Length: 357
Image (cartoon, rainbow, N blue to C red; front, side, top):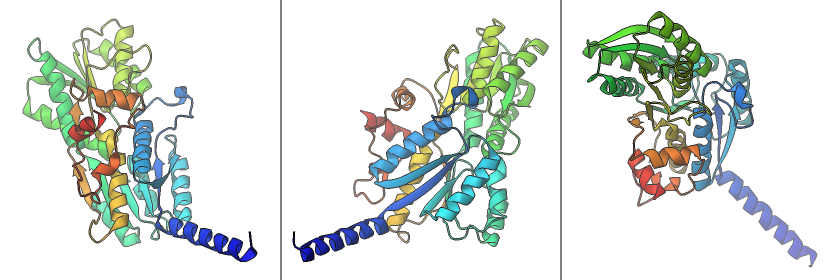
């Protein structure tokens, strides 16, 4: 090949690659949970966050987005380090989770103004958002589920199972004291209790999202208060711990247990009586929103959004749950939810189910 043709080919290729790199959308997500590479014994908080990441990757693939996921492994020191690294890398967008308010507290102390930040599933309070804005932090929006509705819905479903048979005596195992999702789910529980005086709250105890703490605290309370016949749990991991304890006490048929997340049951632990879920898809919805904003920020600006997406697991949505558990969501084309599509459809559980068919 003549040298001038080779030079022209190299030049054209470089320009093409340069153009692609300019237009490509790069997102970093700091996942507070565990990756699949971590030993299962290290993860006592369930597989929710792993599934969030897998579904986000599916959406990123459909939209031709470069998504880089970093796992904090429930280590808040590591989470801070990963946030700083991500800010140094200057992605187009950084997706963060305000778990136990650690993220917002850390952002208020560092310079992050050059990276647009989008909160997923847990966002700072309005006061914290204002403080971050004053600090120069570039928070561009958030997407969270209506956790207050989830907490109330879970208690309603549990109560429906026992109300016709006997008095309801409830043990509430909470997530933690500070994470927004935990606080709002607890508030939803309290909303229901305030409206339903027939339910007796025996005790409420923080279980730190942990299967092991769910087990330990259920063992203790069932021996103190054997009349307990409902255990409300802030997530499925806690609920599976409660189930394990009830099996050991041979009381599994006497107590209704429910949680939130649509997690797969661990080996040797029976399925939960109630599980509320759907919010596992909001990470994918975040990718869609950022993709649209990147295409046309003026036309599709980002905002702080609360989504009513929670549903009890039932026969209608069970195919979606099974697909999540099997990591088999390839049939869903997440680009159909983009506002850039003339045939765009709403991001709902019902449409996600239809996309599987």
